[in-house]
Image (cartoon, rainbow, N blue to C red; front, side, top):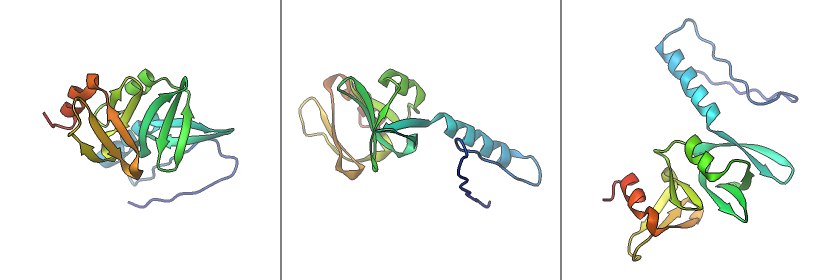
Amino acid sequence: MQVEVRYRPGTEGIRVVVEAERDGPEVRALVERLMDLDEKVLLGRLGEQVIPLCADSLLRCYAQGGRVKAENEQGTYDLKERLYELENKLDRHVFVRISHSEIINLRKITALDLSLTGTIRITLDGGTVCYVSRRFVKKIKEALELS
């Protein structure tokens, strides 16, 4: 498979064209994955800029000061979605709620500290530290198969 990326000023959004000699299971699978990715792109705001954020790049999404934020390794962005909407939109096998105000990407976990009584300390890529609230400890242990 060859991949070619072209940047054209004035183009709205992202356009993907799949060229193949004929239709087949590989082409259909690729198209399905691309369609699936489209649903997992969030629009983050950084000041006046709107930036597409791929869900796979996110470390966490959290509520702060009445706003919902998304954090990746490049920075922190404001989102228009509420946390419950993100919970429904993002892959529930990858993104798990760890508290009333936070959802994390399980694939970005670098360390777990289980020594704390009643909670878990989680370190994400880049050193971001999160704490699992008591109410969600059982859920995160099940998601990580620690039970």
